[in-house]
Length: 151
Image 1: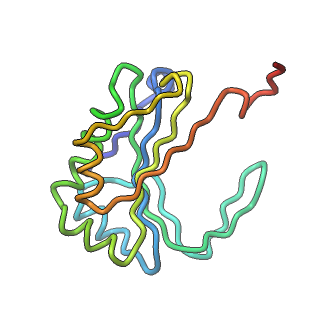
Image 2: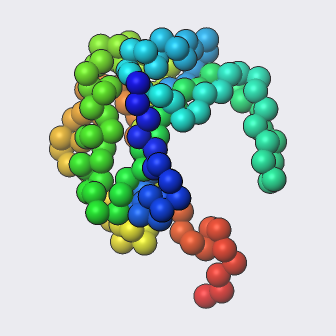
């Protein structure tokens, strides 16, 4: 099994976006998902888990298995999506069946500074998401979301 996270802090400095494949629903078998996709999740949560940080505590309402890919700034978003989804394409029928009972979503978390407020998906990327029955969501975060920036 493999993980495709940045291996050290220096690698994180070169990241232009993050991709997450999130499978959520009731009674997920995390081991089966990992074994079938040959991927190591970056996070797993079970319904009822409480996630705490310095800002909030949140009770998880469904099981969740999540894989992550750090997109280097020099890699196109389309290349990143197609590369990240390749292990799931290899298990297309499994992913499609999972998506019939659960929610399977590809999240893009991007910094607009990296994409100049323009995100363009190729026909191939869209077709791959459609074929796998994967939903697509985009989260844009600006530096002002994290820092008190006066305009």
